[in-house]
Image 1 (cartoon, helix red, strand yellow):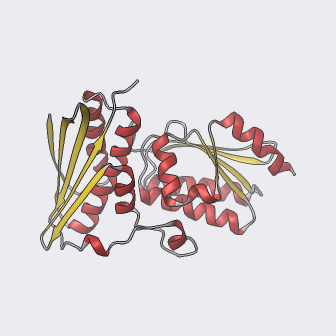
Image 2: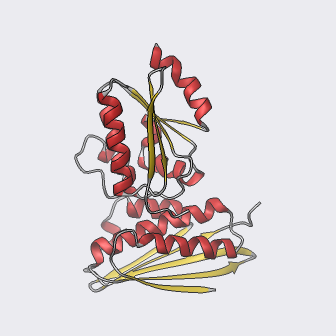
Length: 138
Length: 122
């Protein structure tokens, strides 16, 4: 199963990607909690891509099975300036409390909520690849 | 699951607890709507705030960042912030973003109001 979305940069379009995750995750028989975690992760990846990518965002969703476990693979691609993922530290409450800006949680949430995350970025192309495994729902 | 508009209601209970119920997407607009409701309750003298997220299944970090601001404001005024009816994913997101360290999480509104009442009236 595969879904490909070409998202324009318009308000709340990230919910289209979240809805696709929900539909595919349900079709795979994934537990609702795992689907919701993947939904939040894809929302964050799309918001990052729209904020830093500067143009259209491409989302690819693939439903598969790995050793009998359902597996949802998500790719979010943009054509922005790129960045070095190694230089983006994990955010923490202690870093933002007391500060005017409390932003900068996207990659931290993606890494915590998904089972596997890989980021490839160079000038003109950033690809966030992430995977969520899920047991069958109750 | 993906309601893009938030549906809010707020109430100041006789025991002094301000309750905000939020259903829908907590993004920048949803977070700001909750913040505005919280400010109105705090301006009415409420220092114990319960945010009920039953019906909310999708959030983003910008919206939760605004909830962090509400929490800071309440803590500065020696108040108390609590949440109830969180999905496991929203609960984990709050844990990652530090809300769990400073706010209290309850499974449902009945438990929350029962346990918060002593604090609000004491």
